[in-house]
Image 1 (cartoon, rainbow, N blue to C red):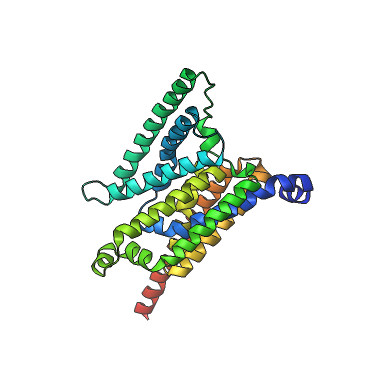
Image 2 (cartoon, rainbow, N blue to C red):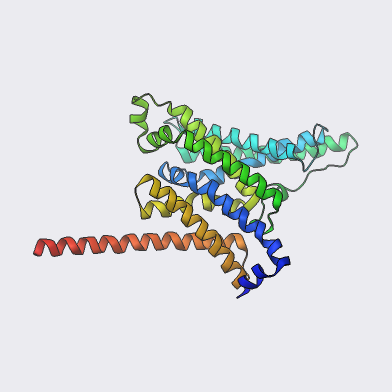
Length: 304
């Protein structure tokens, strides 16, 4: 098996092991929040936030062009992250209003931020040229779209720090979050600050999406934000069981995706996504079989 060859060879293991670890850490970040995303029908939020980050890329390019910061540093990623979190909060605020559906709010910020990013990147080039400097504007792909197979030790450290912060934040706010997610109107009547809870979730989602798409790529980040939770909710309706299943399904999908990629020479990210889709389909099939079996048992009891 190619997988055993890769993992037994010291050189190849050192090349791929950080990617596997980064993928598992990304699962922790995404899987713990995935059930909330599915329950609140925010499946499009990953695409919305990740593409809204283009506006942050444009803003960072302008700041680099005027000499306020260097390209490729921590400050650049911080600007993109702050912009993305701000876009997530804006989506939550606009979508909370009855006259604007949630998906419309997400689409509004997605296209608006991408347009703003395009304009700002062009402006950054013009500013740099007027100042007699080279336009040090990197491609959007190199900033935003990472690949889990090429993740390095630095990516693992950053992802681990964000994952720890996300888990702690969700644990601290678990009770109001769950109350709001299951019955928003009743939660408001009982005094839960639903606006604050929603805003907090949007901040968490912004951090998760920006970190995940940098480490694992935008497609894989969006998939891990939705599919583990959707699969877990097909397998159980109990809170901690759903969270546990989400983590198990996400981790199994990542590990199996790496194996499929190694054996079939496929790209790692798409392989993981396809495995996650297969796991979801399997959970749906298992639920269908249980439902058929339950109806059969009920019919037999009635006849008896």
